[in-house]
Image (cartoon, rainbow, N blue to C red; front, side, top):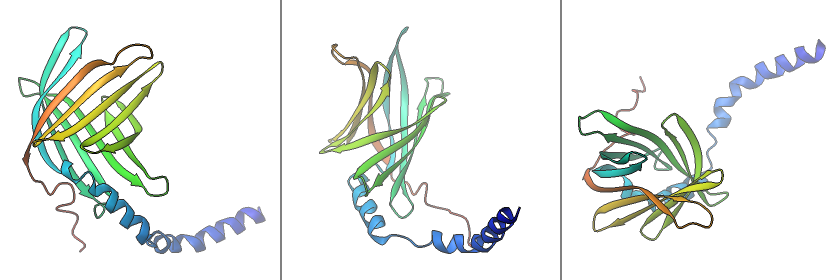
Length: 189
């Protein structure tokens, strides 16, 4: 009982110190994150265009939109993708957070879509990026490029010993700038 009481008293004394400790930022890490995220600044804004997914019953086409913006002083990106069916209903919705870890020199995409969530390595390329979803005996690879103002992203199913099977393609054009998600934060008063 004495050990429990001592631990409770110590915890009560340390709790007020937690906000101060949390505010001890690492300026070098923040600068490295901002610099790394700058490689993907082309993504910021609102994008729109056609997307097609190959399904067992045939191709399914939607109008895909992406809304992307920096958060936490440019150290990460927040992304929302919505795909609209021909009747205007939402046929696809995804949310992602893209970050960079300077300790491992790794970009991470934390994605929520279709009732699932995952954390994936994203690798910037000279003209876009690549990220892969491991799926047991196969994997899904998404490859994006930006060329002549068009953001093209394709999805391929990769099965060992077989050629890649293309199941997804989108071609988006930049529709506008956006101050989302950083704008209109809570009032400090």
